[in-house]
Image 1 (cartoon, one colour):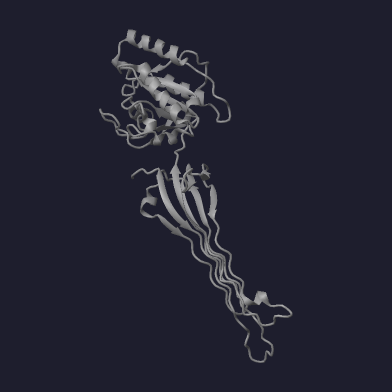
Image 2 (tube, helix red, strand yellow; image 1 turned 30 degrees about the horizontal axis):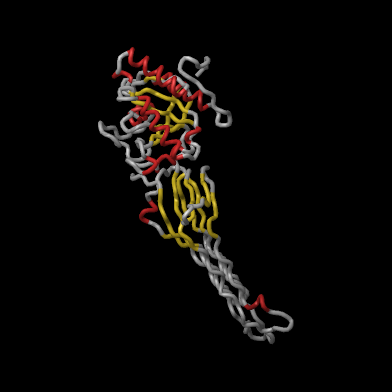
Length: 347
């Protein structure tokens, strides 16, 4: 299945049905009078967040959505039927944005089963029976029904995860995701192997959390370099960032600075999120160099990094312990935890 996190669609609610003009003409009834019924209401445009969807790819092929018109009124004071609402199902985490320069957020569907009525259907028109008065015994006026509303709307998907993986290309993010979850992200020995966000569920010592991997960032990503920073929206909702730094790289400290700079340039609160730092590919450097790197990064960041080797499974347990403790209950503030400073936990 192809991943698509943005789509532009056209939506139109249904118009109201027209009111009827009718008069009773029945045998043995001397004064019939008007009996035209009102029209039915047009269908609403409703968006619903449903489980089981993680892409907007369906909206690439179906871009126009129109609710049905209400049924017209009829004689014998029969009111037209209301049109059914058109329910558009989207993944949990989808935002609805207006098609304007500011991309104003109209709705944010973050909960399973959440619904929002974007456009209301038009009211049905009045039939001539409703115009009857003591002085207007045979009205012939009626209403055609109110027209439905229409607009273009952008859909933007922001995946929901507890922790988000960030780092330079080839820092080992996809390898780590595959090692600690049931995901099968593509891994390759070249930059930008990951072209779309990936999600995986980590199960560790009786606790579960969702980990999101996004394409790597390079210097200038906020200005469009590389893949750019468009996928950073998928870690906006996370409660914690897992920052991977390649221990075997030329300058791991500078690599950390580059990614932090892009997070700050992007904004949206990413620079303020709690951060756990992991030194990936730690098996490729000797112990002395590893100690130096840990000391350098701790001096710059204020937190001790966790050396890991995802393919060998080394260092993953203390890293996952720290992430689980840092996440904690969603309603509690996160506290700084470094390797070796964690209190005893039954997990």
